[in-house]
Image (tube, rainbow, N blue to C red):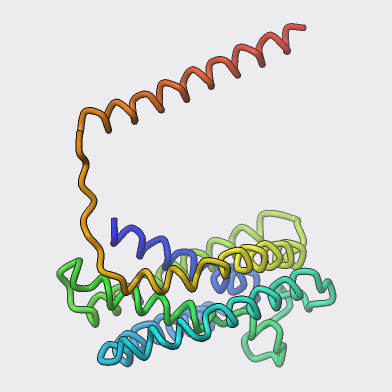
Length: 233
């Protein structure tokens, strides 16, 4: 479960930059360059902060709330601002400051992911440095997959890329704003001692799960029955 959570966090971090890279007209080499730079920065952060985890936690504890609020407002502003240049007309060598700013991953998010790698390394029986570079490699692959996937998708649809991008930025800003309310508590809990969860009764747990699925099936069948009756009328 720890590895799965780390994978999900890496995927979420790669979505924004991968989407923008895919909508741009950058060459394949430029997309690989940006993806490599972002992935390498994650591995370097793990190596840099490994001997001073307390400093890392202090940075996240002090600046995460303010940084996430500012990032959320900035993303909402860009999502609402319809005058932002269409990223389908951008390239890596352009002076489009908005494009470059939105393309870069959130530094606090990178630091938080690096902290997660450092903390999960011992639990997964891996060196944090090795886990950091493995995560960086997965980050790199996800960026490439998302970038080239979006790039291919944009060639098959007629929807304006700028409209999709602005909607995505607006959603991401609102999501970041909501997450900023509990991120500080999450950072504090990451350093707290954990005790394993024990189940008092496996039978009762299995019974509860079975009952939940039975209720879901009954609800689905009831909904389907009402829907069919409505179609007959």
